[in-house]
Amino acid sequence: MKHFNQDAFLADLGTTPWSTAFIFDDIDDVWAHWSTLFNVIVENHAPVIKKRVRSNQLPGSINKLYKKYRRHPTEDTWEHYRVQRNLVTKLKRVAIKRC
Figure (cartoon, one colour):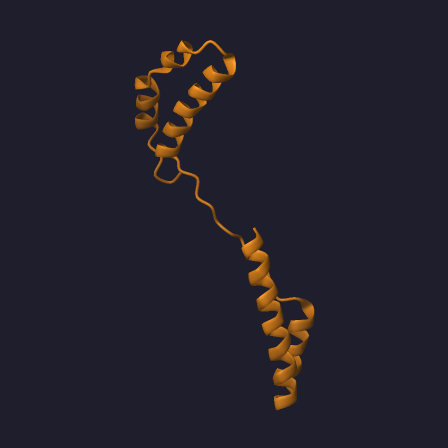
C-alpha cells in the first residue's frame, strides 16, 4: 500500500462497467463477473506481495553443537556440528518445497 493512489483507484471504480454483470440470469454468474471486475482493479492498484517471515531456524541442538565447537575447536566437534547442520538444511529445503 506504499504506492497506493486513492484517486486513481476511485476513478477506475467509477469507470468500470458494473452493469455488464447483470446480463447473466444466475446470481452466481453475476457475482463471479462482478468480483472478477473488482479483483482486477484491486490487483492493479494494490497487488498482493508474498513475503516469508523467518524466525530462528536452527534447532537448539544445532546451537549447542556450534557453541561446543566454538569452545573446543577440534575436528571431532566440527564434524558433529557439520553433519547436524547439513541434515537440518536438507530437511528445511524439503519442507519449503512442500509448501
